[in-house]
Image 1 (cartoon, rainbow, N blue to C red):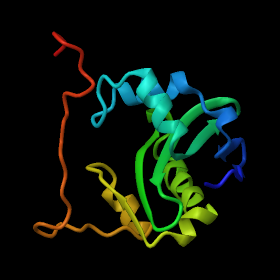
Image 2 (tube, helix red, strand yellow; image 1 turned 90 degrees about the horizontal axis):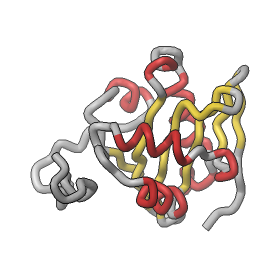
Image 3 (tube, rainbow, N blue to C red; image 1 turned 90 degrees about the vertical axis):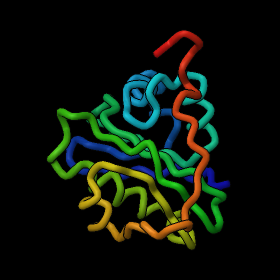
Length: 153
């Protein structure tokens, strides 16, 4: 695994891979209310961050965005948990966050980088992603209720 921490700056904004700057509470708060991980618990978020290559988007010291790459650091990466807070959207920061992800040396060596999204497909297409949408190519086991506690709706 790669222990090199990168930092990118754009005016008052920073993207960093240094876990010292990751604000677990802010990341958990967003993800637990997201469409893809509703109800996810803080410990699961912590473990997922610990075992992935992550990128924090900061406005000064406030975490306003995030992206996580699940990877073997050699051939494959799955880009996920990408977000920018609503107040900062439509300012180019989402695109910049993904560009910073792509600028990481690990990303340059990966043969396949995948993502699953139903939002901002235009953004990902501009950055080189193409929809697969081929029958029987991408498979999954989907367990949407895994983060719900018994009796929780």
